[in-house]
Amino acid sequence: MRLQLRIPPVAWIAAYGGAMWAVDRVAPLQQVIGSPASKSGWLLIMAGAAVIATAVMQFRRARTTVDPMHPAKASALVRSGIFAYSRNPMYLGMAVGLGGWALLLGSLSPWLVVASFAPLLTWLQILPEEAVLSTLFGHDYDEYCARVGRWIGCKG
Image (cartoon, rainbow, N blue to C red; front, side, top):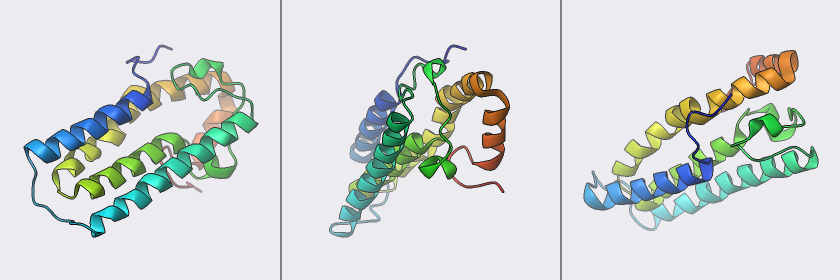
């Protein structure tokens, strides 16, 4: 299955970050968090980066691809570690990082952009990936999906 868009998730995060900055500069809604409290956004950015790095290391240990543009190259279904809590920890880490960026910017405007990240990425990237992984790993993948949430959380 071809992905609907051929835009790597790293490009999405850069575009979203830029859009958040632009919206904050052009149409800032109420400033809700000022400095130094807004600096706590760095903690979220670091947490998001740590989640991404942990997931990448697990993929590397499993000797499977980390390339989201070619999910058919996956050679292993990783279900342990951070993947026991999220089927998409790299995307979750990106969302957490965007939340940190929104905190750093301080106004409500960037949060309007952040709110569209998960639904858009789910539709354009995750659903096509899931279709490929379901074909590749069959019942094992379906069972994994039944146990672990797409973004976060165990189902049972």
